[in-house]
Length: 191
Image 1 (tube, rainbow, N blue to C red):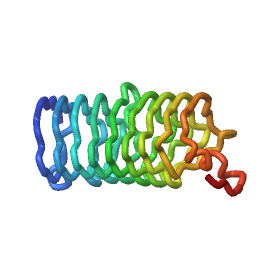
Image 2: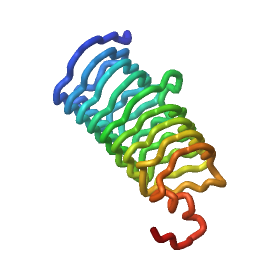
Image 3: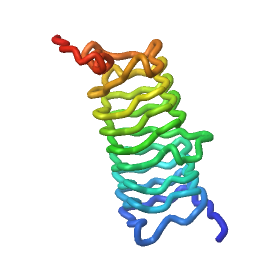
């Protein structure tokens, strides 16, 4: 089957579990309220697309391309972004639920992630240099050999980051977030 090129389409409340997306490239398409949970998005390219209030939980992302893509209000639990096609990986996450997702060894340099629920997310060996994690709940997130240099986590919360196991030079943290940098010492910090 030949890959398709689909441009400027709008999809509203489509259930792609019943009728999967065709393999190919989607440019400047808008997906609103669509259910893509558990679907196979492998080898599909999304360029300049917007996903609003969609469910992508447990979708397969093997060699999936996301270039200049915006996810707003989406449920994206259990996704393996580490399986995506890495070249040109660029997306914005706003007000999304990404619990149990993996960014292992993924390049998220300068990425903007806002207002996201990210419990138990794997950022091990990820490059978050100069990234912005604005008002993100990072409870139980894994940071191991992660590059956080010049990253902005001033409004992020519930994280535990070991400065000895991660690169944090010139990263920005709030006074309230300092406790998350000292967890390994099991000390009581009062403010």
